[in-house]
Length: 194
Image 1 (tube, rainbow, N blue to C red):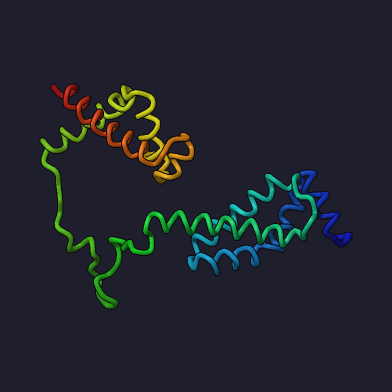
Image 2 (cartoon, helix red, strand yellow; image 1 turned 45 degrees about the vertical axis):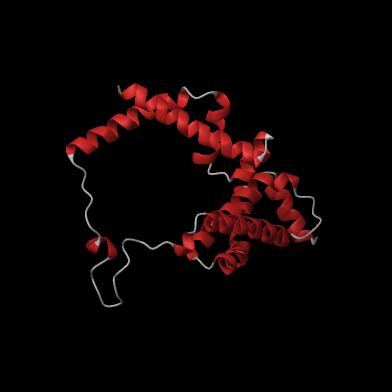
């Protein structure tokens, strides 16, 4: 590592804001271009670049100097971009279509303009409001092993395999507990609504 980089690293480790600004200005384009090359999406690449520098600032104290600062940033950006890619891939982002998409290149009408309206009746809205009030209580009444697996699946959006690993149980047990949790919720909600 050359003297200039060693000095910058020392200033970064001391929490020098000016050094961090210098660091970002020097490396922003390389980090952004790497993320954009992997994600092919400007907004996501910008987010990854920002997250790269945030992560670098938080962990600069652990940087051992085994590679250059720019190589270290490049690796952080690559990992974050891969994580974001898999996050969107699991949610099928590439196959989704915005409702604001025009029907054709020269059309002003959007997909949302031609979709049938599904306005709820007051009765349907009342049932929905009631359900939203009862659901948290019903979930809280679940036995812990069912509540935990439901939270990991629905709130944390983990796969069956990830849940199995986290809870140290088999994938089959995860599926069984999820099924039982949903059944338990249905029964509980029916009782609460009576």
